[in-house]
Each structure stands twice: as structure tokens, then as C-alpha cells.
Length: 166
Image 1 (cartoon, rainbow, N blue to C red):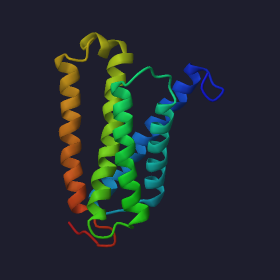
Image 2 (tube, rainbow, N blue to C red):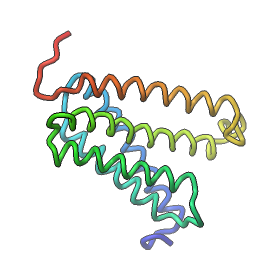
Image 3 (cartoon, rainbow, N blue to C red):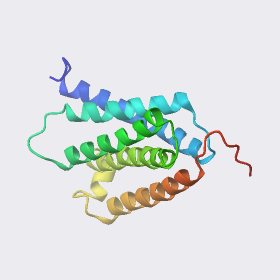
């Protein structure tokens, strides 16, 4: 039991929170490309991303695992995003630091989604049972390339308060 819930129920809640974080993060990320702050979506993204890490640390873990390492990195990156947005109000270099760390936070959620999908979804697991096969590597590689490109673009284009024209 975790916070009074069965492991199954807790896992479902964790997954729902993670999917909300990813969906909101995609809205925020594409908003950044148009230099839109989207404060409501951003708050949902950052809160659910924080909850994803917090609930992830609550699972029974024995020793140091890749999931734990990813959670630690995700938490550190998220702290920089929160400081940049709410502490430093996107001033100076904090604008691009926020944009980059917000996109990295979203990428880490998607990275875990891909890992979990290949572990839990039967047809994906059949394609890459050890997660060292080409389908898994291609999925992770494509996600990485996509988020690096979007992260760079967001860091350059996200200039809230300035009007971007086409």
C-alpha cells in the first residue's frame, strides 16, 4: 500500500498524472514556439510534472535503478524551470534556461512513457523485449532528436511580451 492505496491503484493515478503532464507540456512547448506564456497550461504542466516525480519516488524501490536516476535528474531540471519562471520571472538568461528546462522536463516524461510502453504494451514488447532492439532505439532516438530541435527553437523563440510576426 502506498498512501492508503493498493500498488495497482497508485500506479494508475501516477500514470494519469504523467499523461496529463505530457499533454499539458506539449501545449506549453508549442506555445513557447509562438512566444505565448500560457500561464494556466504552464501551471498544470509544472504541477503534474512535479507530481509525476514525487509519486515516482513513492514506489517501492530496492537500490539505485535507472528509474530512480531519471527521477532525480527530472527533479533537478524541474527546479531550474520553476526558478526561471517563478523566481527569476524569465529575466535575462532565465528566459532560455526556463524554455530549455521545461522542454527537457517534458522530454524526460516522454522518455519514460516510451520505456513503459515497450515494457507494458504487448505488441511493443514483442518488437523489443530487451529494449535494445531497433524499434525501441528508433523510438527513443526520434524522441531525443525531436525534443533537442524543439528545445533549441523554444529557447530562441520564446520571448514573452514581444509580438512575433510571421
